[in-house]
Amino acid sequence: MISEKFAEARHHMVLSQLRPNRVTNDRVAEAMDTVPREEFVPKELRGVAYLDEDLEVAPGRFIVEPRVFGRLLQEADIQSTDVVLDIGCGTGYSSAVLGFLAQAVVAIESDPALVETASETLSRLECDNVAVVEGALVDGNAKQGPYNVIHINGAISSAPQSLLDQLAEGGRLVCVLGSNPGVATIYRRQGDRFFPRAAFDASVPALPDLMSATSFEF
Image 1: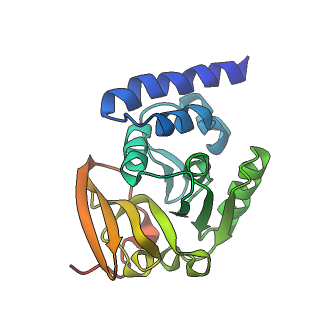
Image 2 (image 1 turned 30 degrees about the horizontal axis):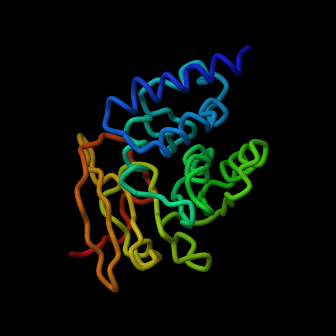
Image 3 (image 1 turned 135 degrees about the horizontal axis):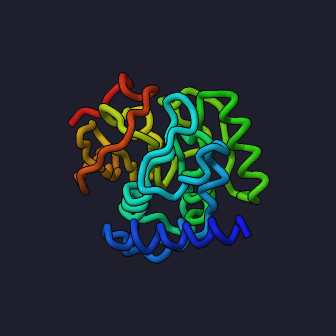
């Protein structure tokens, strides 16, 4: 009965938060209608798991509000053959959704406790194409790259060159630059150059690990 209640809340999230906010990609909607967001938040937050707001799951780690996350995924244009790098995965929700859309996901988290939590939850939900790796967020995971898509959880001051360099040709890095509001930005790689495109205004919590990272230079 509880699972049915959450499934209904999840479907309502898609219809009332994603669709009215320009999330038109059916694959993105299906992914977010399938992955149980309540499984990735502390028990005391499960009752509000589907509100359209950012949910703090650990110090400095948030599950980004659905409409912003959904639009970022749509802008990333993730294909079923893509390999994705998820930066600052926290408890693993974003990685699970990305795993629904992509061929494989490498999730990076610097907090060992969160690595364990995310790995356990993803394994229990049979997200077999997602691997959680402990490491500095700014370093990414070059040895398993290059990546077709890099997704960054939370607002950052600038796109780290160390992550941009891990994009494959034609690859996209999606992030939110700045705050109050920030700007959802997509970087696309063409050869040795990276071309940013502002997509929409978005206010999301900062990702502290990347706030002082080495920046991308125009």
